[in-house]
Structures are given as C-alpha cells and as structure tokens.
Amino acid sequence: MSSNKSYLYTDKLTTKDSWDLLRQVYKSSKGILHLGAHKGQEAANYLSLKKPVVWVEAMPDVYQELKQYLVAFPNQKGFCALLGDCNGKQNTFYISNNSGGVS
Image (cartoon, rainbow, N blue to C red):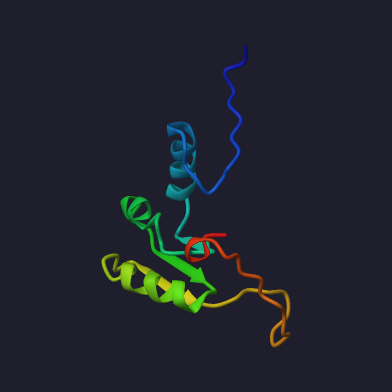
C-alpha cells in the first residue's frame, strides 16, 4: 500500500489530515479569501494562522450576523457582495429555504 495520501476538500474539516493539509496551504499564503462566508464559522481556525481574511457573503441578513461576529477578529473583514461574471447584469439569486441560508 502506498504512503501517498489523496485529499478532497470539502467545506467541512472532518479529519485531522484534511485540516493539516489546509494549514500547510494557508501558511504559505499571504491571506485568505473566503467566498460564501455565511456566519464566519471558520474565523477562529483562521485566527490561529495569523493571516488576514476577507469574507464575502451575498445575503444581507446573514452578512449582518457575520459582521457582528467578526468584531472579535480584527484581522478579518467581511463584505456584502454577490460575485458574478458581468458587472451590472441582473441575475436571479436562488436562496434555499433551509436554516439561515447555509446552502
């Protein structure tokens, strides 16, 4: 059996190996851009890396919660924005009806 490991990133860090791999990638970066911020659940993990973080959340109500939460993390800043491929183009933004826009 080979000692090489394969990793598939999901937004849930469910194993120590996947978090260790992400920490290595984050350590070599100058900062973190987190798209689809939701409420900033990963902020404490990012804090441990001592990197600046930019969070982007499109849903205004969820963004307000993110903004309040990030007050405790001075090197992390949130923006309420929707990213797309064309400026000024109107698109339908589908929002799930689950708890607080987590999907």
